[in-house]
Length: 140
Image (cartoon, rainbow, N blue to C red; front, side, top):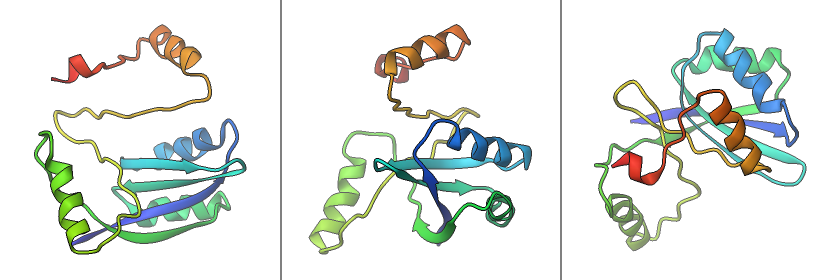
């Protein structure tokens, strides 16, 4: 079975993602996974949410260009080499992977990777606001 993913074209500038996330949150929509790919002027936000129709209605009201594509979601054991098995299988069958990103689940928590223009300042802000930063050692 395939899952609907919303792809949103957005300006690559501070505050744009915040506005989208605020609107989605106010709509009581749960984000199950997301990724952003960027260029100098624009980015592409890819979202998997628990209510695609409601999220699309919000994006339309915000006048944001978006579309829906289907993705395949697989459940892999959290062990080294499991993703390699998928990549190897597809490669051996001459299938190119366009992109991959994670959907976090389990124990009512999610692990989110964040990359910013100023990683030092980002870390300071998160710590100052008592946001737990996880290291690889903490994830074992």
